Image (cartoon, rainbow, N blue to C red; front, side, top):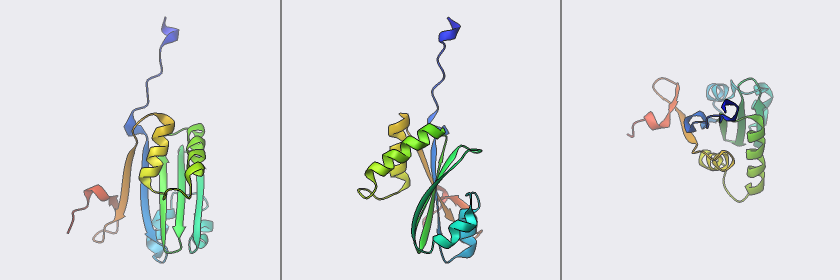
Length: 142
């Protein structure tokens, strides 16, 4: 009966939505935001206007969503999906775009609806002391 063995379910911590932001006018922050993205140099010039794009990275199995209002750029990285799941999440977003604001929690809900698991969200902020990106949950309130 070994051939009926079930594939173990994906653990929730395997699927994450990461968010990082940069001011479009801050070259260093924008460079850090774009460094993992394909065709980053081409994106930089487009972020000075309202912009939205998505890119699947086959090597890392990550789906990158980048949005800009011309002042602030935000990159959402969806980790832990396969290409078929990522495409289905995109279709789910396309169905609600304009009805809800894009954000990591909305993306996590779409991913959860597709995968059936709770999705972890992590927002990164730039530490003013070290200029490094750290999870916002680790930042202390002033």
